[in-house]
Image 1 (tube, rainbow, N blue to C red):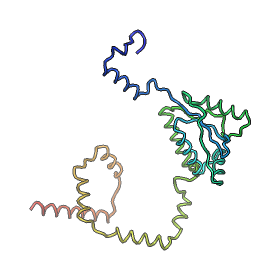
Image 2 (tube, one colour):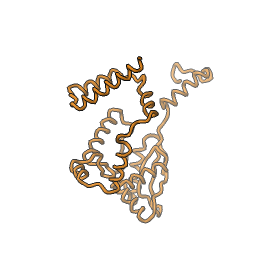
Image 3 (spheres, helix red, strand yellow):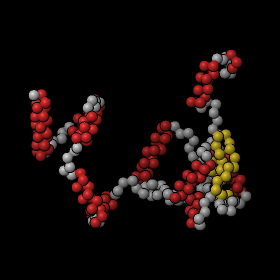
Length: 254
């Protein structure tokens, strides 16, 4: 649009203009990021936290409250929990909206308020966070988070995603209550030795008909079963099933 090969807008046809608008909308060319610098206030309207976000202020406040409810431990969450105990909740206020990621502006505002003696709950001087990380960085961050989650539990709740060996042993040795036993007996009576209805069989048959298994899947199945030897009991069941299938097929052919 600019430079020696610039085309005047009045000389562009409708298709070209729409195409340019489409490029701008889909690739965000020429779109400037706008970031909100906000403050969290207590019941007396005192400033207690300064942050930045590209989201709406109500949504950002909700995220702070959810993080606190899930047990995150930091100065800000401890302050919000203290308000919860008294039946109160913080409010959020817009300080300014700036172009870009807002890191410098956040640092400037935090310094401005602290220089005037305001006790903020910010754990740092601001400007933290990774802006628009690459795919490689996001992948490494994800692997690091999974490793930390597995070793130390969730950062907010401290809960581990998997049972430890000791926990599994305690769980297996703990006897079932009468209510749990009743539930198990009900499940056994419902599912064990219950013949499938014709409707269920038809659904399964329709699902499997014309269901092509890819070559890659077949190779995986073959590799997984390679070297496995079925037991004598399993071979007898397989033999009976094949014999029954052939007998039914012969009946249909007659």
